[in-house]
Image (cartoon, rainbow, N blue to C red; front, top):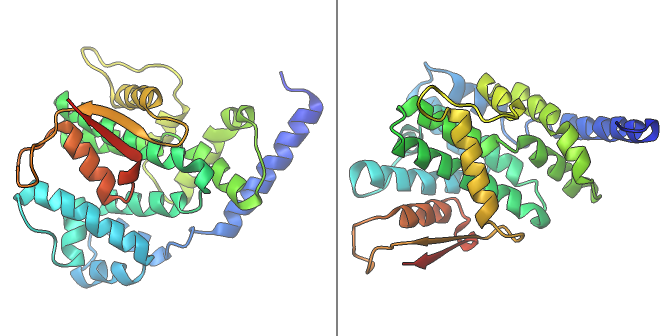
Amino acid sequence: MESAPAEKQDRELLAAIEEYLAGEGNFGIDPQVLAILDDLEASKSEIASIENLIDEMIAIRLRKLAGAVFRGMTGHGKPKTFNDVIASLGTQPAKNFIIAIALFSRLGTEHVKLETGSCAVSLFAKMIAEQMGFDRSAVEKAALGGLFLNLGKIVIAMYQSAAKIDIDAGFAERHQRYLASKIIAQFNLPEFLEEMIREDTLVLQRRSFSVTGIVFLAQALVDRIIDEAGVIRIKSPMPEGKDNLEVSLGSMFFEYFIQIGLGRFVKIIPC
């Protein structure tokens, strides 16, 4: 049980973080972008306009990520227009990626492990769900859950970077779920995210892992292989030669991290 002075300090720090969040608004994301991506009836011209409404760095990373997805779908080429970019990714995955990058961009370099770790959990959760035969909706949930599982810790780290202060790990454990719920509500993210973040047991289905269980498995995997500098080391067979069209899980993982601008944090050991 916390002492009265500790509880008072927690309340004051929570209030300061909430004030910081209120001041940040949508973290530089134009509200029109979110409205367009949430609108099932959005026109092609509205979707095309997103490229000019988002930060240039986010637009570049979206194009690179969509390029990797596009090549996986068609075997060649890259999306020509921004409509192709959004169509390749899907409107909701694109929205979630924009939000994630906007949040990650507010992290100081000392917190890069949170960004690389979150992206790795997302990709591993997606891979595991696909290999277990989950349908597309469940695979997308696994990827999104992995990306935002540590959302509350990301919020706390953002405030640390902005205020240039240290916050003990105990505070993060006590309040990260509450702070995650604030961002989920603010950006109208799927309700299942809050349920997943608040869960503290392994959830199983009758004969398989649940989506939440897969995300927790992916998190445990990343915790095992990521170092304090945020570098992830993987042993994997790799295609031989640049013109080899074959892929492996290791090459897919590395390609994904390159496209989102984090390739330097992945070390592949060919085996």
